[in-house]
Length: 349
Ligand SMILES: *Cc1c(COP(=O)(O)O)cnc(C)c1O
Image (cartoon, rainbow, N blue to C red; front, side, top):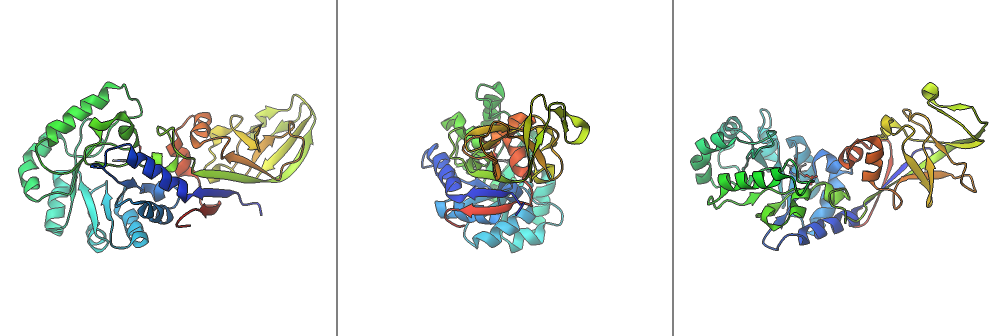
């Protein structure tokens, strides 16, 4: 079989949730962000594993994702939607009992009109200028909203992966100004915010990337491994070139392995001539361009011909691969395609 295997350790995801939960006091609840199909790892299995670990609140980006998570989890846990209550979402929000995080007075009006009495939260903009009500907008509806007992007031940090960035304290101050004294449960921290310390924790934290083993949670238990079969091996003479555009040429007699994965599998083309596979603990550099289904790897320094090579695993994290590609772990994770054979291990597999 030429299909590469993506292994996903559900026990590691559960362990990361427990570790992030333990990073805040018991009075702070720890939710789980499972948007974008749980960062590409499979929202149904991941959400069930996290529920088994103890998570009771889940966040998704859009209502359609929430419906899938509701089907996986059954009626108990709360499922909240960051994009709020969009036109056309009413039936999903009602039938799958989701809690929209309302982002504007327009969404507030839509929600109260369409589903009076249905739970909601409010997202506030504290400076990121992406989602949420602006301070002035919030001031105008604040009294009305508080009478309706929202489930949550939340905001999101723009620079939480940089602990000393002044934006963190600026947003904290703005969040407190908008929410102090409301008596409503509050949430400001995603993974990065949890690591900033207790003043950022409030009543609920919302980790995503840390659950999946990514930075800034550097102490995370590794979650995924990616092993790619070798389709063919050949010898090159010095001066021979490899791949589209002849972007690499051999400067010594070279043994070259062609492995079965490419940019269609989320192994970005920017990894061309930059990434490293491993055979056991031995590094093997990518040479030539990453193509759609294939990548060429220099295996000259191995004392055997490998049958498969590892891109992700004990020798290399998602963030290390992301560095080589000039991006972040989030993008590598969510780009991993649908073509892999996915092997789940642990509780819930
Ligand atoms: C994605 C997201 C999170 C989770 O962020 P991580 O950095 O992955 O922990 C939390 N809150 C909001 C609003 C988000 O969009």
